[in-house]
Structures are given as C-alpha cells and as structure tokens.
Length: 108
Image 1 (spheres, rainbow, N blue to C red):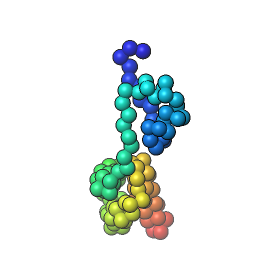
Image 2 (image 1 turned 135 degrees about the horizontal axis):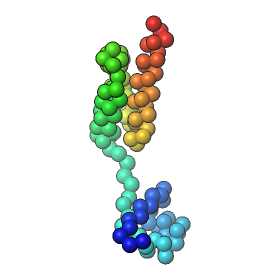
Image 3 (image 1 turned 45 degrees about the vertical axis):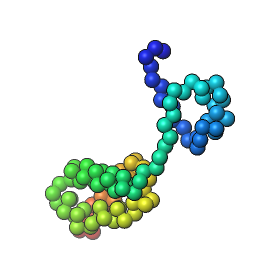
Image 4 (image 1 turned 60 degrees about the horizontal axis):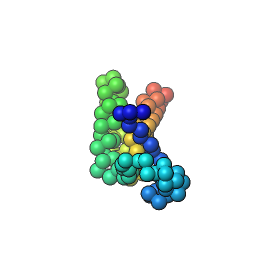
C-alpha cells in the first residue's frame, strides 16, 4: 500500500486508552493523531446561519415569508447550546422549517 493514507476514527478519550484497547504495536503505526474538539458557541451560530441559508434557498418566496415570520432562525439560535454537531444542526433546521410549513398548510 504505497502512497496511501488511512484515516481511523474512534471514540477513545486519550492516548492511553487507545494503546490499551488497540495495543502498542498498532498504536505505534499511527503517524499522527488529531484530537477531537467540540464546536465553540460561536462556531455553532456560524453553522446555524449557513445551514439556514442553504435550507431556505430551496424554498419559494411564499415559503420564505412564512419561515421568516415565524422567526425560526432566532428560535434555533436560542437553543444553540444543545446543538453540538453539523448533522444535528442541519436536521433541526430542516425539521423546524418543514414542520412550520406543514403546520401552515394544515391550518389553512
């Protein structure tokens, strides 16, 4: 396997746990280890803004008005402390938008 990069991911908390679980021979084969860091609150807000813009870009003008009137972006931002990854943020935004639109259609 010349000129190959292998990326391994795990849920280990530290180097000692990796060595204990995988063994020193395997651990010694890793050239670099990048530790996971949680997103900062500032990063979460940036991601919320970006994902929100992506999601509403696919809506009609009427749908955008409904979503903006409901102030979904600020509601989601107010809960940003519990949103810790991009996948979760994306899902919450999609669900909030679709729920709001479906609720509007049902209540007409």
